[in-house]
Image 1: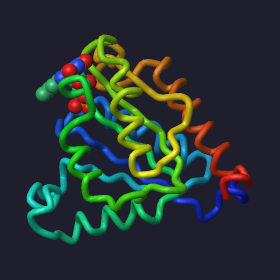
Image 2: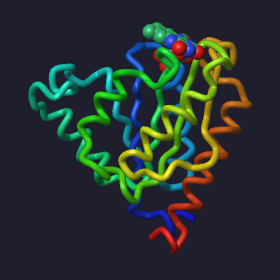
Image 3: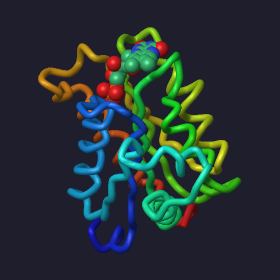
Image 4: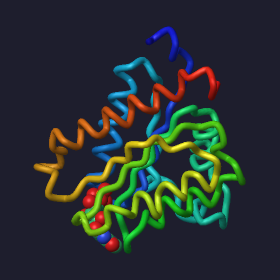
Length: 180
Ligand SMILES: Cc1cc2nc3c(=O)[nH]c(=O)nc-3n(C[C@H](O)[C@H](O)[C@H](O)COP(=O)(O)O)c2cc1C
């Protein structure tokens, strides 16, 4: 597998403003799973980027660099808390900076956490359409965790299993000759 995936880059985008973020913990687990399979990873923490540039009011080297990393990546892992029944505003403003079809040809893994299962469909009604609106191809398995599935910031095994399945699906698509 390592030979096949050599040179393939992935970027994880964290859309939570929280310093002790559950969705970011899941993102970290997904990036670790990709690394174990030989994929180079990089994490972009949107909360650490300057707000003025994220809002498009100014340019900033860090934001330009994050957009360039996304452009180079073949796999994107996108994580967000559910805010007001959908993805976070932080994630939205970053996606607004992408050009039309800016994620065309990229495989995406969608991750969200919410207070309860009540907004589980935020992944299918919000996050997936956000990804496909700029051309990304989300894998079938989306990851959704509730706050009760975390102990001391660590996700329960069921969530890790979901992440592993989503990552395996992303790799299957990446090595598919049809999508090359
Ligand atoms: C401003 C705000 C809005 C929220 N809205 C929702 C919501 O609509 N539905 C929900 O299930 N949880 C909601 N939550 C709870 C978070 O989605 C949940 O705690 C999540 O796990 C936080 O992820 P994070 O730790 O990565 O920031 C909200 C939390 C905040 C702070």
